[in-house]
Length: 116
Length: 109
Image (tube, rainbow over all chains, first blue to last red; front, side, top):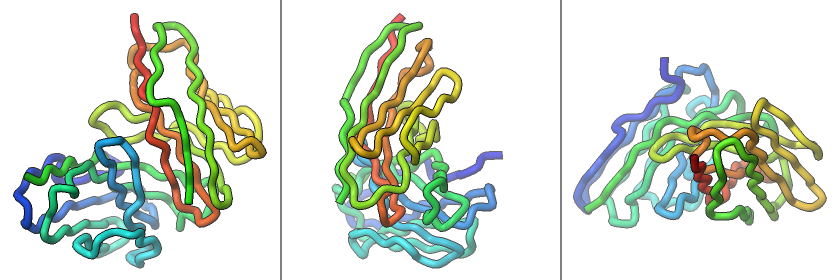
């Protein structure tokens, strides 16, 4: 009965490849997020979707494309992977739009991406 | 932009108290969150403050002073399982959550 799940947990791939990371939440939340945590441990927002609509799109290379088939799923597709993409990617979800001060985000277990 | 500062590391003894400080400068303010992150795991929500003062939750308490741009997380009666990274995160005027780099707390027997 995992609340926010991600697959795969580990992903090792070569530069130039295309890969996808999947995220699912069973909390009934309306908003989902993708974060990147780099080697210095900073968690940075990349994207946010509310009911399948993109609401946050930070300055991220357009090689990264999120897709939300329904409000319980938010996948991240990465084209032409580069060395600098190596990081841990976390999915999160929250009840509302994130425009409420009390809207708490719940995180998935993370996907550790290593680009060789 | 957002600027959130917290110490990199802290060490304490089992049973002791540790206070993790966080200072922030943000464009607008809609609350401050503390998360706990064990190595290789997801951040988990600990506390939320939007008004000045102290919020207590069992062994953990969090304090906020909006005028000073300052918060702290207080961990009491430390246990070995409290060894983790503690992330301070601020929700700015745009309601985006910005995280500090985290404070790694090591609890020693």
